[in-house]
Length: 622
Image 1 (cartoon, rainbow, N blue to C red):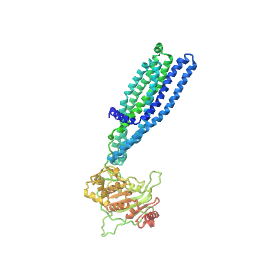
Image 2: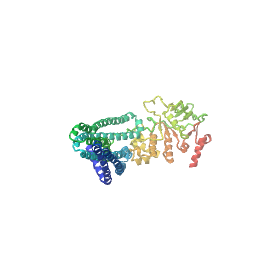
Image 3: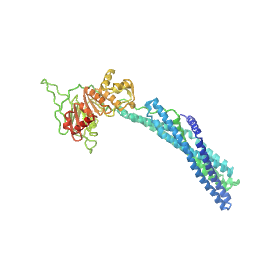
Image 4: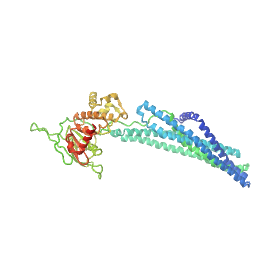
């Protein structure tokens, strides 16, 4: 966007704002006139003190003129106090107006496009950029006003001392000023590009944060990071360009700030030869060194930094929303179901009845049903088998799971209960192969949970699907979110039947049907869990692991979902969020931090004090 266009937009809005602030402007101007008087007296009193006082042998007169200069300094201090009062009346309404405009724009965009309700650019405008505009505007007004009235007082003083001084000083000042002004437009363009890049980087990182699990699941970390690196590199390049223009501005400042002094000193013999008094030359140097050049230096610094920044920032509030340069994070596979590619489910097997438990961990061992013929088929491998498993999060850490033995038969429904932090999620991670045991073995379907032949690192493990508490839903259609765990096509009828079985059919209809787009940010945690549970139901993986995957559902919806998943062919292991989940399971594993006890819901209250307490609390709340 061109600098001319930015200037036109900002100047039009600026004139409208200033027209409504005439009273504070008049107040500023009146107080600033006192600063002009202070400047005028500063140089003029020095000249008179020399010519009429000290050089003429009248010390008292010289001291008197210096006293006049001191009184002018006090007058300037009084003027500055009044200036700051008027400045607040001008600056604070600007900030308030920018905040209102930013909020109105953000609300308008959210209403027009709810997907952009979390626009990070709007947050930047509301916080950082409004404060930047207020500070820049305050500094610019303060310094520009000071320069105008200081220059007025200094030029009037030079003319009063001797008009011939003006042609020596003014051209050098104008040369440096013109060189400085030539740098403003390029600097504004670079500053605007830097702000665009900053907003794009903020938007991009915000998108990546929202879709981080998606990116990781797709293996797109390198690609996503490369796009952020491009924006960072662009920021670095723009910073370098800004530094080069700043160097040119400093050179122009040196010309404007030092050349007039050099010219005046070089012309001093000529001036004295033409009858200009020593006091007039000293007064001219006083105007330059103490008033005019410091004011010009401050003005150039303010305009070069705060001015260009103010122009660019205010233009952000005048323009429509800039196009988002950061592309959306890639989406696709489900990271919230730490799962593997599914395979056809094994047929449901009769639940194995536990007959004994170990002293340390209440481990069930299966007993085969009596064979009807002497040559019965061999018993299938357990769905899950843990033998003397120990796990700790660090070599010196206390073990979370210690010496655990557990066998879960094919088709069995096991609930895991225990206090928060006792190791329930760790157990599901061990079964899912996400964590290696520190000691012992973990087997799934007769093969090691990690690194089993045929389930290697080159592909996902086809034996199980894990649903964590934070159910993940990606940007796509409803159908894609429900069938992404299936290796092949799934008919619409199958998907609808699965949704009805899980009680998610009303949610699917409310979203607009199977082919409707899904915006994960607009779904509640319970809705996301409902979709993830339906996807797990459709998954052909023979083992489902639910790590509090129903915690955001109400008890009735949770019961319906768990019963449907239990009736599904395969094995179900549920980390129970409510004791009612344990009551529905074939067996319950109780983890209490010292020993594990496994049994049925009916028999555990007599064997486990912790379970007895949990059931008692649950019954009291019913």
